[in-house]
Image 1: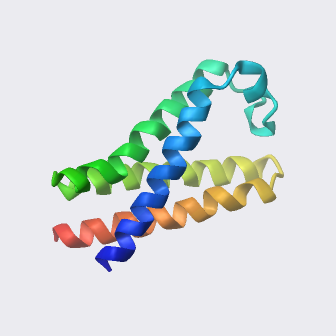
Image 2: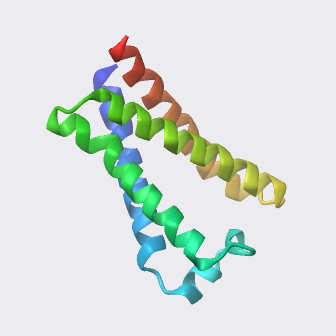
Length: 121
């Protein structure tokens, strides 16, 4: 199970550091082309990117440095909540295809959360 969790953590970290980083550095016109950004201020999109970037790092770095697995579990839990909200937002907007990736990431983050919390107990 540990190797599987590490693989999931690496994939989650790569996804969220990449996605979050792009939301932080992409020019506003490029971000505005994404259909889900309608109605959200640019500052909120950038804040979301920062949150994703930090959580992506916290899913991986504490375990690599031998810090508490609780940090990894908290980060995975935060990403799970974020992805649940993303799925709901896409479904409310009628963007079913756009909800697939957040749903997959939600499941992955949930597995990491469950696995790391199980190690603590």
